[in-house]
Every structure is written in structure tokens, then in C-alpha cells.
Amino acid sequence: MIKFNIKNLNIWFGHIHALKDVTIDITANEILSVIGPSNSGKTSFLRMLNRLNELSENFKMGGEVKFAGRNINDMDAELVRKKIGMVFALPLPLPLSIFDNVAYGVKMYGLKNRKKQQEIVEKALKQAYLWDEVKDRLQTSAFKLSGGQQQRLCIARTLAVEPDVILFDEPCSGLDPISTAKVEEAMLKLKANYTIVLVTNNVKQAARVGGKTAFFLSGELIEVDKTDKMFTAPQDKRTDDYISGKFG
Amino acid sequence: MSKKNSQRTQKIAFSLLSLATLLIVIPVGLIVIIIIQKGIPAINWQFLSDVPRQGMRAGGIFPAIVGTVYLVLGAIVFALPIGLLAAIYLSEYSKDNYLTRIIKLAIVNLAGVPSVVYGLFGLALFVVFFKFGASILSGSLTLGIMILPIIITASREALESVPYSFREVSRSLGASKWQTIRHIVLPNAISGIITGTILGLGRATGETAPILFTVAAFYLPQLPASIFDQAMALPYHLYVISTQVPNVDEKVRYGTALVLLVLALFMNLVAIIIRYQFRKKKKW
Image (cartoon, rainbow over all chains, first blue to last red; front, side, top):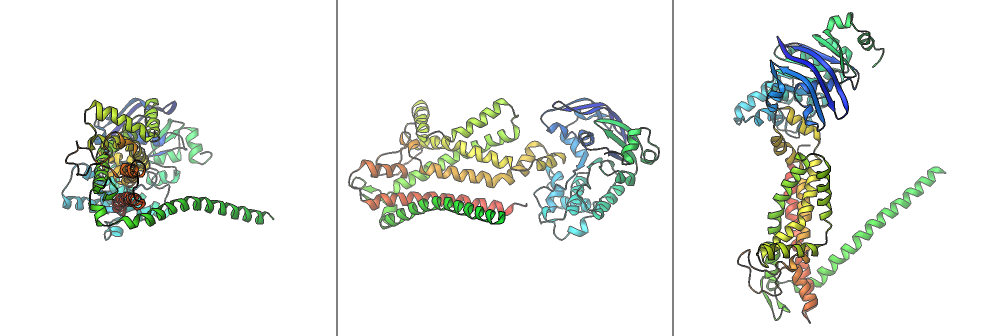
């Protein structure tokens, strides 16, 4: 099943043409890794999917992004962002307690029942493999957690609103190898129930999590294919050069 | 050689910096000490609770204390909500264009307008045009307008100091713009907003010129009954007994100054305690 149809997507920030004519489909329950050097447009592409780019003042777009058959620009922006969650590059807890961080989304959607909130928080923290580490101190500030824990808290916070899709924007760029392994493990388990788009600077990470890989360069989508195929027999020479570390 | 040089530079810089600090502390300290020393003998229960008597040479200053409290509270009630809403609009909603930048610049500059100009403005608008007459209402509104730029500027800076990433995270979880402001931005800006309010409070307590034409009574032995009454106020009363009434005992003048000082400090203290309560709740 196709989750996203993206057709001739062009975006600009002021005079900068950040994405050029990108056409790609994203399949449900699969991990799509997006790789490419800095400034290749991969984060802009990711932020397109949940309409975060439009918070920037000088943003313009052309083409269309369809989510489950509907143009996302015809949908309510808040609903799009609820359905399509996002985990940012740096761990960004809100200045609230651990509990309130995870419950933030559902509270904003009007869930007042404390017991229901507790259930949701517990479930989300378990899914993100954080529950055992924080269950005794849910009321302490989220800033007291370590970097890796904070990033898993951010994953739990995203899961708590029960999205269909989770966007990961270089989620391990600030983490050590062990925390990275934990985040990757969480992602692989989540694949069963969610569609995942992972932007990563780490080519090896893309190879590890499997699924499909898309390679962006200077705002253009150069190539997208099954990860195995991409890493063994890339179609484009530039992909080959990037994967084998000749540039980037 | 160069090590010695850098140490000497460090010593000179250190002396200069501490000298500058001392130059600020000494005059302030002297003012406070002199006012306390000369004012304390005047302070007793009658001075604080009685109306002025014998052409303001004896008796108390109670009506002026009450008048100042009314005026300052009135100014805050008027200026804080409007200032805060304007600051939220300017920092969160307005587009960054030429017009907004001019408006922001104008507001910052308004804080530097001489207070007597606000007094004349209040006289023309509230006293004459709106026909409020010389009254607590006119005085409060005039003081309120005078402290609006202070509150707006401080609140805007407080709101803008909340990291953009918090807003982005909140929006990415499906919260609306207003929910983000209400639950994430405001709680983290509140102590800066209160700091701005404290500055405004202090200014409103001490200013004489804005109340001169709009509310202040030369001598009014009874307390105001409504916001449409005139009232005495401490800064103006101090001016009157220092320059307009002959043969006022020095300790009465310094006593009045001391009461004004303590009143301003007390209001600041209340605001600081409120701010401390909010800061304790802050999670980062």
C-alpha cells in the first residue's frame, strides 16, 4: 500500500530552490532512508511531509504531496501533524516533566481523563524502551535525562499521539553508538505498525535499517530503490560515489 | 615578559571595573542612607494614618499614600493586559516587514519620551476630550500609557527568548499556534514579563509630571470615593511641601520621601516574590 504520493514537488525558501521536481512514492509499513550530503534537501523533504516547512515565513511550494490519497494542503494542518509525527535531530524535550512531555499531544487534543493519560504515557514509554528507566520519576524535568534517554522520550512523545507515520530527522546524530543501537532497535520494531521515513547522514545506518533508500543531491532525487540493491548495484554513478565515500 | 604584561592589564581592567561599580553604588547608598536618617524621626503611626494638618506642616500623609497606591494599581491593571497582548501579537503573530519594524522601533522610543509630555497628552485626551476631569481614572490611564512601552518591550524580549525549537516541537505534535503560545511560550516567558512589570511599577510610583495635570490634588484631606475623584499622591505631595509651602519641617519632607521609597520597594518585592514562585516551577 502506498502512503505518500509525491509528484513534481518543488520548494523554495526565498530565492533558494531547496527541492527540485521530486517525484517519489512512500510505501506503508516500511522504512525509507533518505541519504545525501548536507544541503541536499533531505530535511526539507522530510519537513514537507508534515507541513512543518510552512512555519518558515518565506516558504513557497509547487507540485503536490498526497497522504493516503488526499492532498495534505487540503487537510487541516494540525491533523496532518498529528497523523505524521516527527523526531528531530537533537533531543528536544519540552520544558515540562517527563509525564507532561509524553502526554502533551493528547492533552492538546482535549484528553482530560488522568487515568487515560497515564495509560497512554506508559504504553508510549514502553514502546520507546524508556519505561523501566523513568517509571519512578515521571514528574521530574525531562531535562534531567541523558541525551539518549531524551531522544527516546521524544520518540515516546511522538508515539503517544498515535500517528500513522513517523519522520526521523537524523535522530542519532547526537548520540553515542549504544544509544544509537537502542534507537535503531526501536525503529525496526515500530516498522510493523508505522510507516517510517528516516533522514540520516550515516550511510551505514541506512544500510542497517533496510527497506528502501533514497539518495538526494543538491535538491534533486537522484535515485530510490530497495536498500540492498542500492548498496550493491546503484544505477547512478553519483550514488555509487556517495555510498562508497568518494565524496560527501 | 608578555605574561607580566597581561597580568598588569588584567589588574588595571579589574580596578577600572570595580571603580565603575563603586561609582554607581556609592551615590545610591548615600541617597538611601540620607533619606532614612533624616526621614526616620518623622515616621510614626499618626504620620502614616492621619490627613495633613496645619497647611501640610503637620499631621500625616495617609491620603497621598492611598492615592499613589490607587494610581499605580490602576496603571498596572490597564497597562499589563494591553501590553502583554500587544507583545504577544508583535512577537508571535506579526509578519516581519517594514511596518512591524517601524512599530517596534516606535514603541522602544516611546519609553524615552519625557514624562511631562505624557502628562500633557493625558490632560488633552482623558481630562478634556473624554471629560474624565482631573481624576484617578485620568491619572491611572496616563501613567498606564507611560509604562506601556516598558511592559511591551520587556515582554517581547521575554517571549522571543523562548527557543524557537520549543514552538516547532509543539506544532509538530499537532498543537495549534495559540496552544503553543499558551502552554509552552507564555509559561517560560512569564518571569521576564514580570520583570518588565516591576520596572513599570517603579516608574509609575515615582513620576510626578504625568499626574500633575491629570489627577493630583494640592491639598485634599479626605480619601477619594470613586475613580472619578481627584486624589493626592506622594511624589506630587513631596514636590508641594518641598517647594510650594514655606516652613515645612525637614523631617516631614524626608519622611514623605522615605514612605515613597518604601512603598516602591514593597511593590517591587511583591512582584519579585510572584516571579520567584513562577521560576521555581520552571523545568529547565
